[in-house]
Image (cartoon, rainbow, N blue to C red; front, side, top):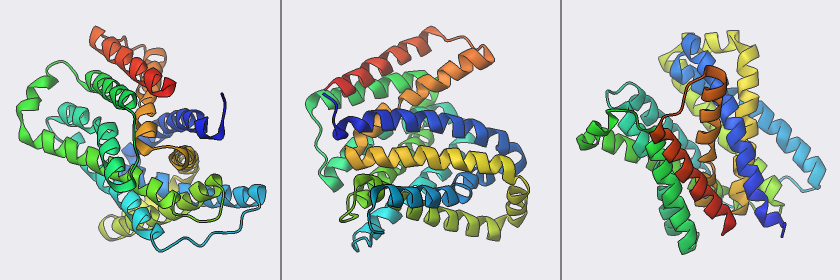
Length: 299
């Protein structure tokens, strides 16, 4: 039976599709802007679109512009700053010899989100949902591995980097959900969009100041490439809008587990666009992801 509560499912799938498109656009800008410059465009150029989304939502819902409780700000800062920290660790992993292993550990985000959600927000998951999260996570870890990559599991550094990065990604999801559910007296759509505006504002401010101090030339290049950056920023804000709508309706662990369908979308793009064949290992991982996600939605 359809209900408002089940909208988190199409919201999450839409967000995952938007994220795949945004990642593809950002990838094309990494060369001229560097990794941090390409990362900042999702915030810097996404922020104006979040304001536009908020104006449309206010007119559509008739909600008053909310004034959040004091508890909103710690949750928001946790979400915004944790996402930046997680991104920094992920970029560090990209330059490491054990990138593949680190990436596999990063995929434990859904499990850590479930743990943090229970500790900090009291989000309760059924036994079947926990099983679904575990199955899907195992599937995505298998898919992320590459031949010979398993040798790095004995190394301490990639283990710590991957697990800590996953922890920050998980804390980011918990922080944003915590902020959304503290916005009083408005619809879940307004609460989610309001949180998105402030989240992108904080992230834009932090990364822009960082680039201004450390790499002012990158900022000049960003504004010189404003046309492709604008499109990437829109897709980033679009994807985030639907992530936040999903966070408003269900436990963050549910959202981050279903979000693993992004792996399926990315694999499909690689197969059809670049004619990259799937190995038996990747196929087995995909099967586990599908089983886990199907079980999560069914229960």
